[in-house]
Image (cartoon, rainbow, N blue to C red; front, side, top):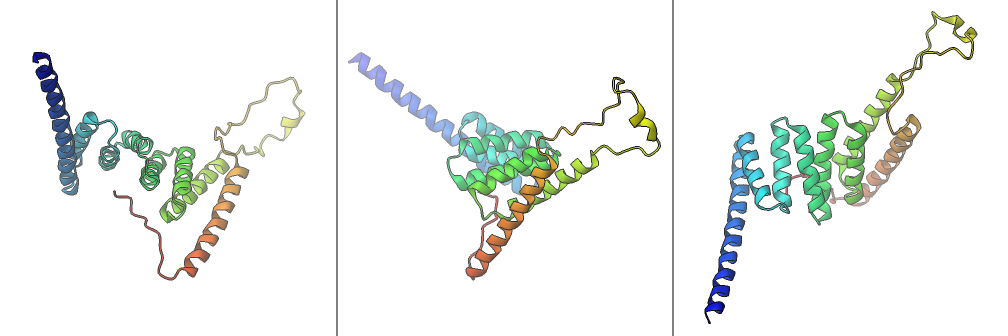
Length: 217
């Protein structure tokens, strides 16, 4: 009988701890939301971080943490928080919102190819996300512009370069480190334009139906 009492006490003790942690976790998120609304993003960040420490699977805490970090200019940390939210959520719409925000932080950091990938993942989950489509096109245009600027230019002041012996080392033009070449970017842009026309036709057929572009949960 003594053994049974100890087991029951232990079970109730564990239950109490779990309940307390859940209450603290929820309280931290609520407090973080209030601070975020007031524009106190640093303090909000601390509350959201507290919530993620209490529960590593809380997608809302990671998502809100990413928003707060972005507001404080910590885009690299915000990117990681949005990645965490995207990995942990099992809801396609919430996942698409986290990936969209991740794409924005990557674009701001000039990580264009990574942001393009994030926007593409967003659109696979939510094809009606017009903001993601527009941001994808802007990122593709910016990447195309960078590639054109990195093209080696012929120097008209050196007409005798072709007469140099073949075994002589020649200066190599700066290499384009982009994983996407100009042709691939152009193909993606064309595909995006065609998809945009198709969506506009669908919208015209549905008089009052529109897409929900909100990114808040």
